[in-house]
Image (cartoon, rainbow, N blue to C red):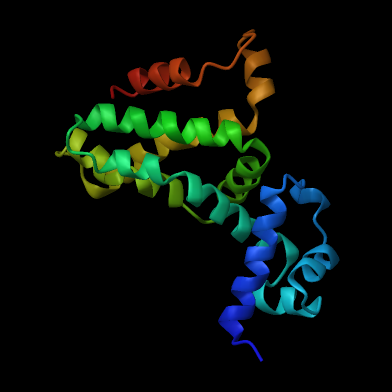
Length: 183
């Protein structure tokens, strides 16, 4: 018999494989996951609480597997802090656009939950950019940087229509946004 953590990993791996095969997360059912993982359906709820929790965990793994380069940019002391912030936001924007359906699910979850994981990523770089800010000021600034970008990506088509734009130039949007924030 498999250990519990091994079973959980096996379920997660099966779900990640389905996502990487391009299966729409909305079309992935508990039965399909159980069949792919060769486990009883009840184990999914036992280990993850719900199909949605499992799908979110699998999507996080997919996004984390491709976002390593972006995270490395944050600690690259060869670049000026403001350039690192921009490069990080560019890279994350590319990932969000490439994995649009997955990213929207993660963004929606973060925006509707008590999580502030994404703003937390940039706290240290913001501290380097403006070391005289207090911890609370840095946390507020990180939200001011990240939340509007999350909102825009969640509503990309509406955003384009709102600004009467034909195409989504994320670098231009990031530059305009950071300039408005004085970064």
